[in-house]
Image (cartoon, rainbow over all chains, first blue to last red):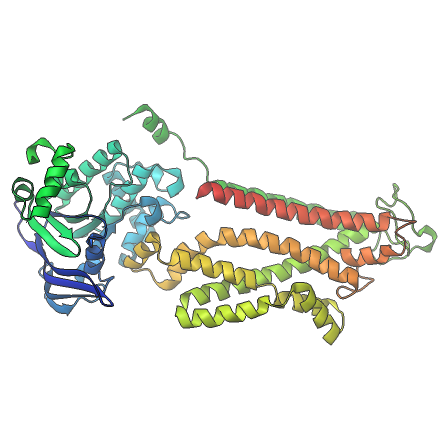
Length: 260
Length: 282
């Protein structure tokens, strides 16, 4: 990455609901155009972290800065903090799209706050569809009238159209089959490079992290088990748990050669 | 690109079956309404015009469904009766639909305490069976069309409230509504664009069911004398007129009975089809 402007930085994030501590002492920082993969088993707190960062969970931290704004937060992260410019691509595209709304209108809602005139909005949506390689006639289709991969691409377009600085991905590929996974992963990657957007992706798939991540954050039972650059994580994992995980992925052949 | 995918991309999208079906039902309704008005305009008889020379006449070319004990043309009375039987029950069930849906959505969106209060009131209304409520109302205030409509309206909305509440709750934290919220849509817009379009089909199925049941209630209560009063040509009241002549002139009862049967069946089958279409979608 040539660009090295820091985008988001957080230290000692704590999330608890009632007496239950869901996340403790999570820290990371990311620059513009970087991709962070959050990995870990189910229930480790991956999705909780994403929700906390979007202000959908009560969370506290020692320090939180976003986009070099003056909003340096200490304490509770308020809902809808500077992350208003962030977008979120979810795991199941069919659940994330209103089944009774056309793809075009769903995508257009991402620009709701900009109050664009109709023809301008339509143009933006069509160019966003084009960015994810969907033709213009997908504008009027319902989610039930497209394939799962096409629906996920529409969700990607919905995130990209707002030109966010940060996009969260919550297992964006796991509902798709391998061929579509590869296509969408490559599309995500080329768009990230073209737009210099920062990605935070929750994933189970170490292969995906090995192929695309700049940094890897491994969570286990709500705590950080490893936080390393991709190279370091796969060559020399920080913790025993991370070592086991990487070894397991290698033995399954899930990692590309370069990372092994 | 694989072959199947290129075919998929070049094809026009498969039509939305729900939308297609609504169009068809809309056209069919308009055609039926047109035919009905035409028939009302063409018929040479008045629904209340007695003709004592032609009492209890069997079906013939002049009287397609025969005449009743006062010599009134039954076919004409059936046409006018459609306005009573179908129209009243339509108004009652639509009221229940609208009121119940509003109550249900409000309950689901008003927090645990409000939800609890509203749904307990709903439950207490459920305690009154339709027929008993209507009969009690008629007993207290006298049998009349107005009292029948009021009584049936009062007990018509609870099912809609329950269903609307359940659907709203289950959709409330769905991913696409979260997305809409993150995109900054107001509650009103979320309701209008995201909630209603997704809960209305199920509520419509319930409404068809409610409409056909209300037809039975209106005509049933009128037959018992609690509802629409003779000489109005309501189908249930016509059945009551014919009861005394069941042995000698069964056609007086058969035709109104068939009319009720047909109306209820058509509405129920339409609702069933709608339900099947929805099941196929999800």
